[in-house]
Length: 231
Image: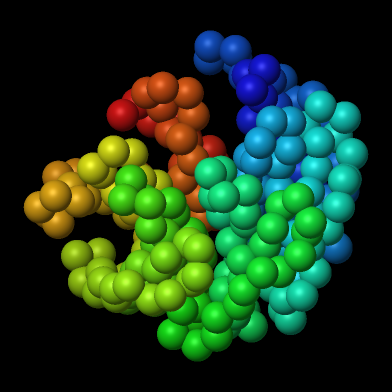
């Protein structure tokens, strides 16, 4: 909204940017957490959420840059979060190997699942076009129901050359995957075949985010580069 992009990282900050065509302007930097900020996502406007190594999930206003509330309960780093808009819920996964379902309005934890549903190397949650949710991890992608967190399927990701999927983004029938070694793949979900594969970063791809109608953004550990892609 308002041509804004929010970034996060090891500096524990959230940075708010104004994007116009090929130019950008830093609008605001706020100290968001006491540990590395692993991910920031958009909720219903103007709310956003961030998760961190400090075991906390914070809710912010992108208009006022103020913290509104916090979700507490994870023991250890919260690797990733996902907003399920039609349910007004947030799903989180962390180092404690517990998958949690939160009510955005009450800020209460509705359900949690431990064990196979989440593992120490999990890095990304993705809402699929089917309505189910995918969780990435070491040599596996776990598919589960977003309402009761029940396991539906486990997919081996051997197509990533023995690396693991660090993040992904679902656009239509395409699942765009980033890996821990800088490779990015586009998988056709109808055929389960790779239609694009390339080394686009030199290190861990930490995030893939849709931006506008025809663009998405990739973030990596390679000198903190952010790249824009046309889909």
